[in-house]
Image 1 (spheres, rainbow, N blue to C red):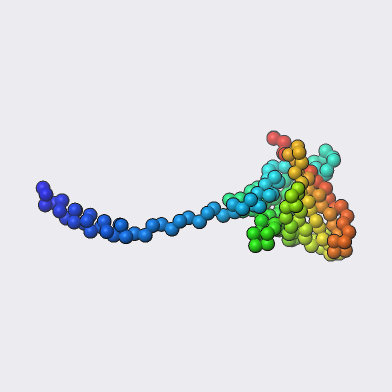
Image 2 (image 1 turned 45 degrees about the vertical axis):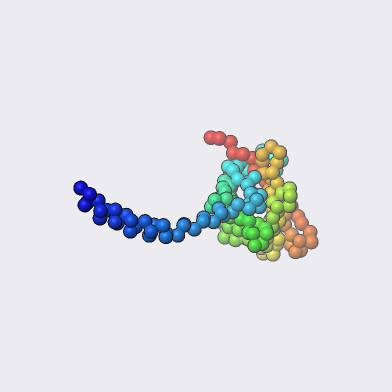
Amino acid sequence: MIRPLLPALALAAFALPTLAQTPPAPARPPPACQEPERRQFDFWVGEWDVYPTGKDTLVAHSRIESLYGGCAVRENWMPLKGTGGGSLNAFVPADKGWRQTWTDSSGAWVDFTGGWTGEAMELQGSWPGAVTPGQPALVRMTYTKGADGSVRQFGEGSTDDGKTWTPNFDFTYRPAKAG
């Protein structure tokens, strides 16, 4: 009876030094996108009904999602009439600011940059034809959280490189009604 155990004990004794020499697994890196700046646009995340500010005429639905472990915020803009589209937004640590890329079913492709002002998210980009067809224009958007949980998106346009600004659009995102 002792004889069959000897080969097993010998194998076990031989394997122990090998197991002891196995290097420890490398430490996992900290989770990505943990900087507090990445949470600056979280107030916009949700399911929304969108109205012109100060009016009760529904013009769109919008789904804003936090994606990729909190590394990005994506909008899906669904107007009741007109051009649908969406944006992908992210904090870029190397730039110390935010970027938004907007595209829609009209073929528009706009890159915005900016950041948190302490009270609102402000993004600006070049959007040809956004103010006057065929003319270059800057568009500045300001997103502000309301005390009632709404979000106001106020857009302004400039055709003189930002010397003067004209209101371009003004929307209030209200939490979507169930049903």
